[in-house]
Image (cartoon, rainbow, N blue to C red):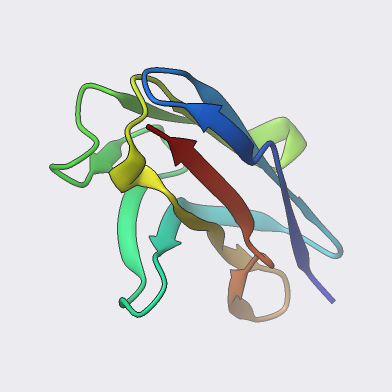
Length: 118
């Protein structure tokens, strides 16, 4: 069984920074794309950023220039550095990964709450 465990969420004032981490564990041969998504109450889950195994990145327009996604393939871990946070960034942030062992799995983490106060 493959699991993703997120950490690093919390409460921060507007203009502040947080760093999210997400570590994959279990039987893993390789991980292709990894990413972060977020969901606000009453809204659909939306993409924040993704990164390929080779390091190519993609960002939502709303976070470009403020958030940076990175990964450590040796540790099966993906990070999200969030700077210049504003109240509109308040959401539950979910990690996602395309994990390969004997099959390919689309795995989600349990989510971590990020709250930005004004």
